[in-house]
Image (tube, rainbow, N blue to C red; front, side, top):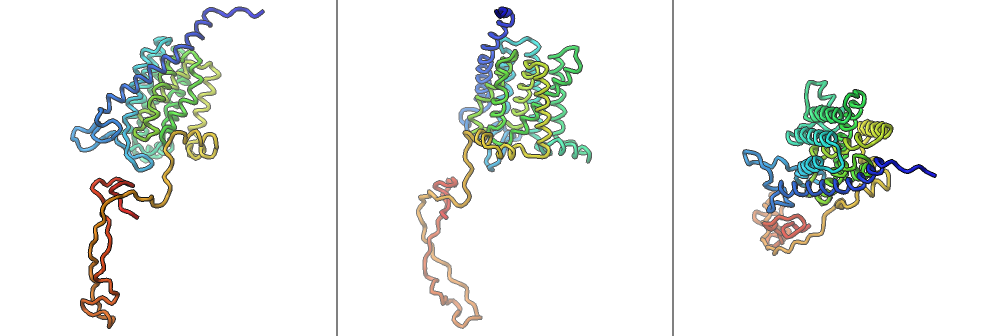
Amino acid sequence: MAPPREPAAVRGRLRAAWSGPVGAALGALGARTAYRLLIPPPQRGCVHDVFRTAEHTRDVWRHTNFRGEEVTRLAGPALALGVCAAAAVAPGCPRRLRGAAVLATAGAAAFGAYDDLPGNSGGRRIAGHAGALARGRITTGAVRLAGVGASGLAAGGLLARGEPARVLADGALIAGSANLANLLDVRPGRAAKAALLLGAPLLAGPAAGTAGTALGAAAALLPEELDERAMLGDLGANALGAALGTAAAAGLPPRGRTAALCAVAALTAAAEFVDLGDAMAAVGPLRRLDGLGRRPAQAPGPRPSTCRCTTRILPRRPLRARSRSPGRAAGGDPTGRAGTRRADRRPCPAGIPGGRGERSR
């Protein structure tokens, strides 16, 4: 007959069973609330006139995505604020775990914002930053890597007091997870989908409340990303990865932490030589999961016009007289087209591509 379970173990499983969903609800509520507060109602769903600089000349959170369209990066601050607020009150989490989650998320978000706003990151790969440092140039991406690593070590120090080896391992796991999420954030929703897929097992562990806050915030802002109205940017991606790394460092057993750290290190090293997006596209299930919910790529070639503008009939200009040909006298036109008329479609003032103001082709 099997011995009865210890009451402490039963309480731990029950706490993990309800703290994860509650933390996810808190994270989703915090992220959506922060997003609504950051984007006023008249501009919600639009990227204009949001968070302008003191000179009121440009939007510092505006970014051009891979399609050449402008989106706002305010989903990143919204996610970071939502995760920090939810992690601070997440149920079933000890104080040290709450402090480590808030410290790691806030630090990664701060240095991610520093990399986002100045705009001289020097690329995403570590080799690019190292090469710039060798030439005497400090990129914002290098500052971000150093800052995220320092905040990860500080969070690891809160999780494992008096164990230098574990502090280093936990700090590397937190910082590596933040950088890996940043490497994946090159297409709408890719980093959030990877976080939801890889972070779901953490909901069954001791750090389910912390993991739930990050997963709930990512899921709440995923529709904005897939519709390409907003993006996480370096700020949001680093904050998301740091929060999940903290949950993994606190909730996994020693062998699980070692395996997670090796997987993060292997993917980061592979990203130096192979594009992770191309590698995912080569695997059918990953390709379908990556494109799930995203807008399809635009087909090449001209699109059928839906312009209904009125056609203006303008007279054709007469051809210039040329003295080389005897039939081309001054003011004459042997082609007989001088008096013909042609149709010239003028674009509407709206200027909407594919709509009423686009020129017919």
